[in-house]
Image (cartoon, rainbow, N blue to C red; front, side, top):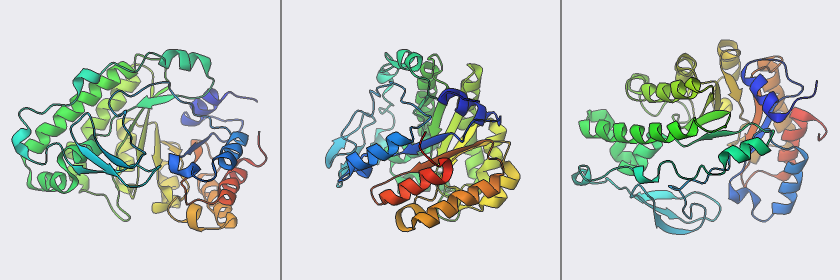
Length: 333
């Protein structure tokens, strides 16, 4: 049984048999610094089953990965001190609430950048996801992280008004996305620290769960899958993500009890990686990498509903990247 990449990922998300485990690797530009030829050659031997969408984001077209200072379309000023990595917001657009009545998301940018998406989908046999929504992270970028936490904790109504504006922007963006030929809608927010959620589970359910439900419902209304990414310890969220219809979750499995996750949730939501990028991949040995892959295989049994995925950064040795590939897929295709 030979499958195209798109068929393989679709079957995985539907918990159906596949000819091999689907694969995906994420690489920031910094991962290639000083070794681009070698890393690209290795990755070419194990091509991803996920493909680019052809979308050109008119909002975040900025020097994200270059040192310097710049102001995004939302009005927040970023500073980057390291080439190849994303910087940080140093001056939030709404650090002072006095500007709230005149501030608005960049609605004028919506609907742009989609010109090549359908042709890209037609020309590719890979699975293509497209999105943008990150309401919690954008809330922090616009208001400032410390202020956003304090506003939520104190119940300041202005933070809820701001969140509604951000959500309205992302919903309108997704209305364009679901009219294209992509396979899935993709949204993200990092919700976990090393050991717990960043806010209380009840607060998450009250303020943010409805937003992600809207994204899932919009995706499914147009026969698109709904994919989500969230870093950190998010164990308390899995049941909610299943409930609202997230089809596949990209999360840091090794920050949580993997065996319990598999016991409770395999067959209910697809797991789109990932391998341990904070410990094993950068600091372990190839044998450690192989052991982590085997742990996932043991936990998830036949691995239906599992995509072999890893985030490779500059601190990950090439021999560990190769061990990741070989442990999941053996010899190159």
